[in-house]
Image (cartoon, rainbow, N blue to C red; front, side, top):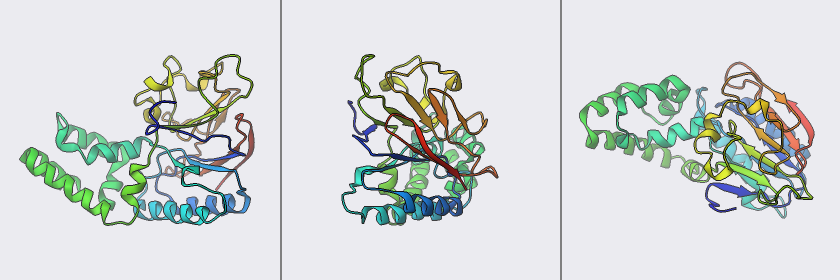
Length: 275
């Protein structure tokens, strides 16, 4: 597929472990990691389905946990860095936009909206505050640029954090999405919050992290993919599996569970658990 900086080909995985939205709940994440570590085999892949941060207050600890587990898995023989994938969810998208707030047409309105969507905990984790952000926005572009630069420097001061955010992808897939209807091997597409089934993969835009209506009603393979898997349901309807889709959202960050599924390259769910 074109644009490898946006999409990642999992090549021919033995299995794919997909972890739903974490929302800065490191205790749940650690528990999932323990299970995955005990069952992970050579040839497996690990995909975090976005929304790793936000909502919960333990943002820094969550990212440190992600980085620690990455190092632990990479110590396994034969495992490559590209075998561990982090998808961009709504919370990661908002953080990236927050670091560029000085370019927004109405930064005060954008900042207020982001805070209502759960980004306030990420802002606080890196030493920022809504009050200072609003004051900087009222002061103009230069002042706001200094404020966002302070946030960026706080992120850079945490080893590995900037690298993780730079590694975010919009989607991951097993097998080629361009095989056509006569393909012999079914494959799987993994996203954060959904897709717009009316559009091709390269034209999804922000549907990847904000979702699109009708995901649960997809009634045929999307663009040759046997199953589309997401980690967060914006409508908060929770875990669901259909013939062509799966939603691994157990409400983590909203008082619920963190879900992890193990998938065959064909999209068949081999294992499923929640903590």
